Image 1 (tube, helix red, strand yellow):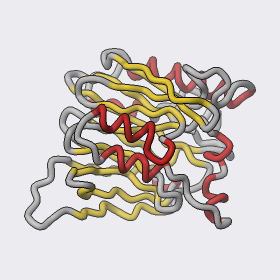
Image 2 (cartoon, rainbow, N blue to C red):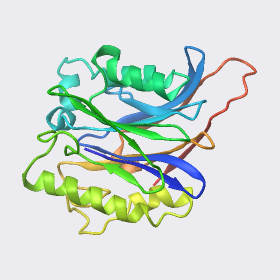
Image 3 (tube, rainbow, N blue to C red):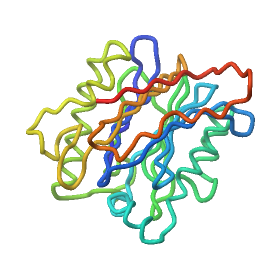
Length: 263
C-alpha cells in the first residue's frame, strides 16, 4: 500500500518511497556489513520488512500487490504467524556487488520478492512485477522520466487492486507522483513533494495518506549516486523509532551516509 519512485534528479539517481501502513510500525535503520558488503536498510521491527541500499550504489524498494496480506500484516504476525520472508530476501539481494546478481537473488532466493520491486544502480533501473499467482516480469527503465508503481498490476492483468475505490486510489496516486516528480529539481525536493496532499486530508487519493484504514507512516529516499540513505518518519504515525543501529567493524570508514528527519 505504498508508492515507489525511480528518477534522475539533476545528476543524481534516486529511489524513493511513501510507506503506507494500517498499523503504527516500530522502525530502525540498520547500517552493517552483510557478506562483506556495506548496507543500510530500514527495518520494521514488528514484521521484519527491510529495504535500502549498499556500498555499490544498488538500491531496492518495493510496494505490495498482495494487498490483503499487506493490510493485515501486523495482525497476522501478532496472532502467531511468521513475518513475511521478503525482508530477508531484500537484505540478501542488497549484499550483492552487481545489479545482475541482486536481480537474481530478488527473483529466485526463497521464492523471490513479491509485488512491484525496483532494483537500481547509478546506470539503470529494473522493475520486477510478481505475485504468488504471477511469474516475474521485467522492464528496464531510463531514469530521466520518473517511473512510479503503486498497488495495481502494470505487466500482469489482475494483479493487485483491479476495481473499486482502492483501484482508483492506486491509479490516482501513481499519476500524482509522476506529475510531481517531474518538477523535482534537487534531491531535497523529493520527499516533500511526495508528501503533498492534493485532496482533502482524509482522502484515499492523496499520495501521503491519512485515512482510518491506511496512513503514510514514513518515507525513504535512496540517493544511489552519492550513496545516501534518508529516512523521514511521521512522529504520530509510528509506534517508535529505535534509532540507527550501526554494526560496523572498529575503524571502518563508512561509504554510506544515513540521515533521519521526523515530521
